View 1 (tube, rainbow, N blue to C red):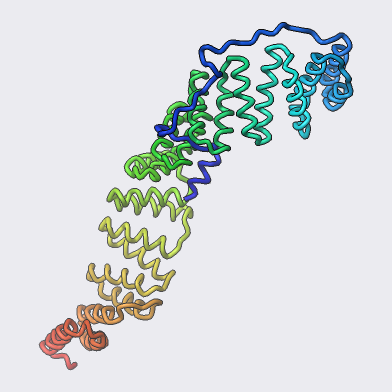
View 2: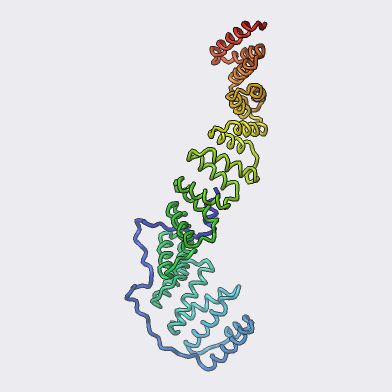
Length: 420
């Protein structure tokens, strides 16, 4: 099943509800007692201000590299001016491809100075976390986001969401759910990305029922991606909740959402498990007719088996015959022959049994000859019946049964005046 790959592509990683591990403390350190440090606002020196204005003018003209160059070439004197300039360099460089390292370097310098206003310092902490996530520096991202919360005494749903993603990349699966739940709490409304993160988290820990619950909730609030019904059915199957899996896959089928052979065959298997062989056969036949599954011997034989279980013997014979023509396996020809005998279609059965004797991987040769003898007998072909029975006699385990048939064949032929 391609299930794991599909889910990992839409959700980052995992967490386990109900774990025995202590719950993660989420939020600013100190919780409700968190106190924001008050810092007096200051202005940069006039010389620094003029250079920054020139840089902004270039920024407005989309000359970003020139703007950054002006700021990098500056030599501010005071600690505040240095931190102030580093902040602007970081903000400009952060959005430029290939300048992330410069941005991170200047953020660190500005933060180390610990002299900027509350707003500027907090903004840099959050930017540090965002860039660390982009650069796949997940421990650094987690530390920066926690520092932002501690410094500002604030919470933000996007910050929590990024912390959940970073935790998943670090395979700290218990933390993923805690941060995702915090993101939902702060946001105050459903968010598809949060549901997908939690779903992936539970899936990664093989908590498939819980993963399915998150996907159900997502579909309740965001029904615009109906293909997720297929993934929901697959999750229920992994959770061994075959009843819900069948119900969900049936909904998907009725809404024309199953468009691959694997999905339709899965629905067919679920229907068989629920002892609905006719529906299973129809689904498999539907997939075959639309060329969603290959016309292979095993596929045709499976459809034939479903029709046989549904007591649709003619359809079963048709598909077993098609399978036999492709595979030329003795057992496939014989399956068709057995059903033909049941329907007293002895002429057709005789043809199928002869093909079984010439087919690949021949087994139970004596039994096939005995069946062939019976087919000849019911067609009043007594000499051919006797010859086939004598060949069946070569198999020791059938000797007693064949002796009875030989005697019966000879007796009937004699009564009809036929020379044997």
